[in-house]
Length: 144
Image 1 (tube, one colour):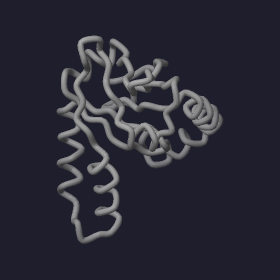
Image 2 (tube, helix red, strand yellow):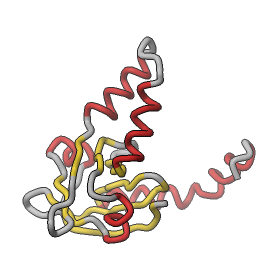
Image 3 (cartoon, helix red, strand yellow):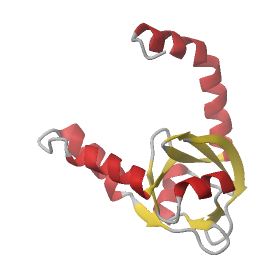
């Protein structure tokens, strides 16, 4: 399980060092793609295969399914850390997530999210204020 929060610096060549706990858990091959809430999703190769299989099982006759498949799958790139443990963030993903110099890696169970540090700070402050209400809703449906 991927958990925790780490801040790192994106260099001028669009490379960023993976936090050691995440690098070990994700392995040598991983997939990075556009995520939700203006962040990037980083999956271990095996976890990505499970996501892709679920998406492939959905009917392409539905516009929402086609759109989401295009969003997630067409933006995906396979990455491997270099000898220094860095991964390259492609331009289209850097722009999508609004990444500047400081980025945050957030472990979220089966994936790592990559955020611009300023956007993460704002998002986290907003979510922390809503945590009680979210827990209440999840309790109502039996999720907690």
